[in-house]
Length: 298
Image (cartoon, rainbow, N blue to C red; front, top):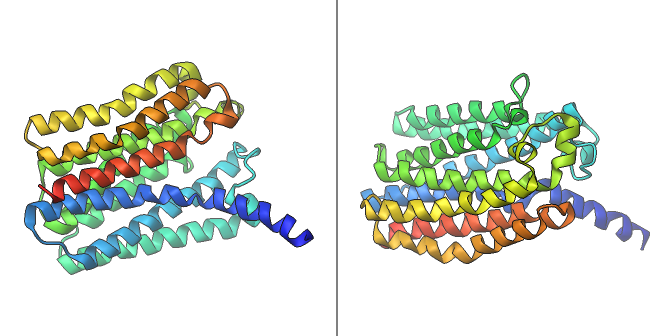
């Protein structure tokens, strides 16, 4: 009885620390880029797809775990019980695990470039990773200056383009356009993840967009932020950059509206609005899945 009482909270904390739903953030860019590549070339290299997908998951693990290490340095996670650093009680080990994820991910994309005798994929991913490091990593910590969403936008755009290139070994206007949409949806997740932690951010000196705007104004921006995904999809269809079938993306609109309403209703109630990031993850996954399907069935 005592053991189960002790272990259950720890299990919940570990699940919160690992954030399993967040790893769809790694899946969607690879899926969308590869789907466009297949739609345009009628060839899908499953080996490259599998290796790139695995590497992308490892890169997300690196970012999540290393960010906990960097946040522990600044004290911003003092009230975060599910910090990996707090759960392990060993910052050095945690940082080692993060770096092993990074190294293994780099080896994966290096293998793709070696198979293709083309360094483009590796170069794109390495640049994206370097930019991602500046989000929380010292001495940059650009996320503390409110630049996290912009960094996210740049990095995930590059990953979609890299995923397309890994299949087609060419450039495509459609892949660049899709990259913008996926990156906006990913940045929305980051934006929503800050709504409930304004007080902690203020104490640590983190000037996130939510801190600068306040939760009320931020909640008013979320529908415009998320709505741009659907507006851009329609625009790209009208411009014949996307096939008509990509309008399937609009099937995810109910999830978006649910997120918009939730943030609007509870923006000033941290305990209730804290799950908005997972609602944004659900919207991101559904939107990305449908976007890829739209290219495949064209």
